[in-house]
Length: 470
Ligand code: ARG
Image (tube, rainbow, N blue to C red; front, top):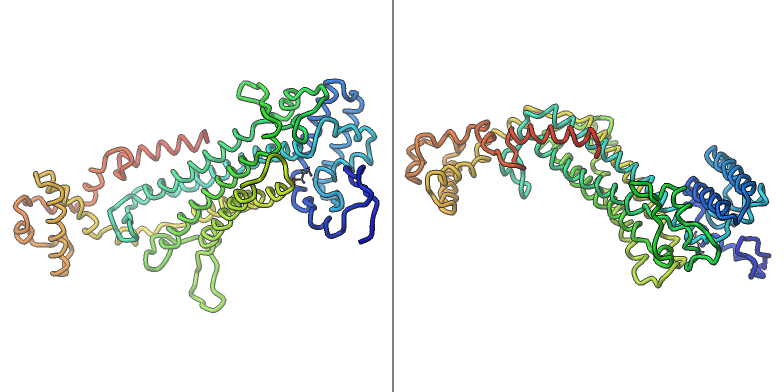
């Protein structure tokens, strides 16, 4: 292997540069270049602090800021040349700055790439978690609109994928809303967890120089609700800790599980067998062979992407397990999974909002499915309970009523009253009123139940909650 003189920033103690293969193996700029805006913000804050404590002059600070702004503009315009020989985003930017501004040689004073990358990532998490929270909110709003527009539609609710009891479609959609709202809460929590400034931790043990960590934290917006700076409290933990990565990926993975369950419901509902909904053409595809097909691809991909989101979480857990304190180069592998989790979750949320927002509810099919009186068999047992029969006995008796209806091939509510009364004396002449669906729904009054009073309450609650986004 030819020996090349080392030119990288850390090259002082090396007589030869790294092998080509090693460069290819160890570079991260091909993926961490997306941290550039945060890296530049971090360097501006850091140099402002250096000037504030007198480690560089105001002129040097201004020259560094102007240089960083110019580089930032070049990157934003896609004109910046990333160089894999310089390993990562941090060294690419620092080298470019050094070419323009002599004072750049002072920028890395009292800083290491270890606290630098931790800072970049915390800024990135604050930014992207807020974006995911917003996109979740948008998907929730699309869901609420469908629920409201179809608030009078009833469908069978399912357990074991068997028809169980009637619910308002909106009640089912609101179950999804609860899931998504918890996801949004998890993204908002990531923002809070990210809100501690690592800069000043150095490589592992801080610095001997008289820096002002609180100043840097303030510059970067690492502050609490009252504007007080929040700086990380242990330099070793700061450069070794990757909990936040795992929490972010976990929030995405959990959201992915929810996407997949919603998607699966939609796949079932849009099948010919159910046909409760038609999915929008814009989010479906056809078959290359079968002309009649309209496939629910967006939902299938939502189901599929959740595997990827779980994989990313698992990668991070495995990456950090058993790793000695503090920074180890393994940790460079922490970025591809979180970047991918962000990209895919953001896409999923948009696709989910589009698919739900564009679907139409097939009221006729829903009404036909929910008309099955067997869905109210439990109500019939409750009727007996109200007439003094212990529930276990009532359950048994109604089982016999169901069996009788099946034997005679008639719907439950069309069984002759005398036959039913033979099965239990507690059945009065009003037994059949149990099958009045509207009445049955109205009786489900308690909090969390699918009756109309609760539905009105939930619509009002979601309207308020999703409007403020709080
Ligand atoms: N590219 C590196 C990473 O992402 C930056 C930190 C490098 N630190 C070091 N000590 N080599 O982890």
